[in-house]
Image (cartoon, rainbow, N blue to C red; front, side):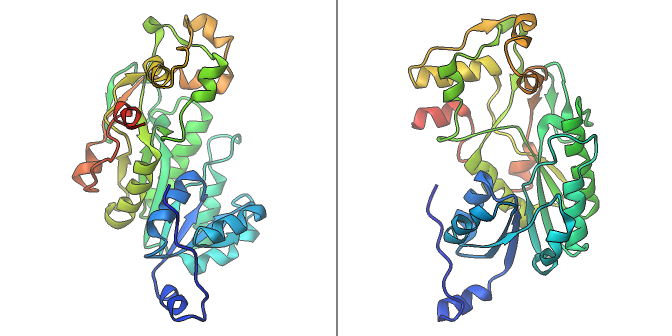
Length: 299
């Protein structure tokens, strides 16, 4: 990731220019947020909401104005209303808690309905299992678990507030590959039981957030996916071959369920091939990494 421009003193001429730049609030400024900051720090005054005080120096060095606040504690969000014009919401719902997302509800309440441009990164998990069939943005959602229902709840609130939604699948990058999983020998599904999976490079997802901030339509959904059409085991095999690692052992579904965590198994229980035509047509963005194979070939 390219290094972001550090913030300048507000008393210097360059600092005064910085204060005149449009503001952008990033909520949940982790890996994807950092990639957005690296691209926009020279053009925006970026405010980063973090729940971790220890991350403040890192976020400040990256070129943001950090604000400590917790979406699980509404009283800590009172300062957000001043940074309402443009918002990229990357924070996930809680890991547990039924079908409602209290974090997005708390964020929108703190923004007081003033966000002019709002982008939320959701998940393709809201489509549920499609038995390998093709899915586009017009396909009705069918969440298969409470985690996906919480995402659907967040989407509904964001769209009602005039924002747009990016539904992202498995996020990977040059520095974000399942190497530890392969080294551990974690099994994958046997070919006859395997499921289709979908991918997006982290850099492309960051670029899509920026494009949606500029050109996303109010209430619109965009599938933020690349053109890879791989089954999950095929993805692991490609990465293993590229790094000269053993391919994962393959197990029938009944045996694999006992060998992996419940959350990992839930990802292996849904199969869909997602189409993201609106990304290029409406957001007018051509992916830098259109397939996983393109990324691996560049290493």
